[in-house]
Amino acid sequence: MISQLTVFLENEKGRLASACRAIADSGINMSALFLADTADFGVARIFCDTPEAAVEALRDAGYRATLTPVLGVRVPNRPGGLADLLEFFNEHDVNIEYGYCFSVNQEYAIDVLKVSDHSIEDALEDAGFTPVAPEEIYHVD
Image (cartoon, rainbow, N blue to C red; front, top):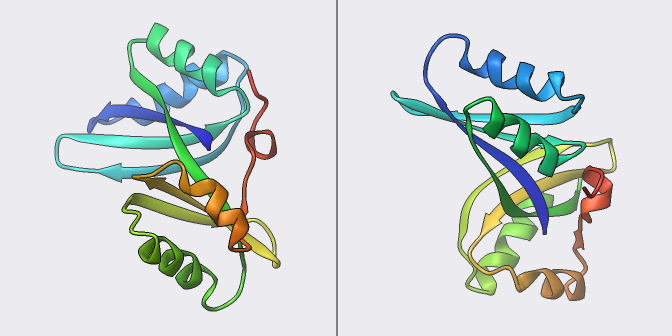
């Protein structure tokens, strides 16, 4: 499992910029940002180089921030790569609460999934999938 920084933001002008500034002013580098929104609030999901320090910086700045354990899986960057992974979870009766992907290079993408069963990580390796280690995403702080 890897740690994803999750920040709840009021859906107001400038809130995202302010949160990003709080992270930057603490000397923390963000490497990925994903947003979801509703009419009243947004959820920013962030990977950064020191997630524990980022949570502290955001809380000190008055934000609701937490670390969320998510599963990162290296998936071949080809048609059907994601479908194969999702079928694996379906076959093992594991619910996916949410997910997103980002392409790393022409060879593979990283799929980030919030799953109902964290113990599935070992079975992923046995099935030939490659989970992403925290050290591949950020400094373990």
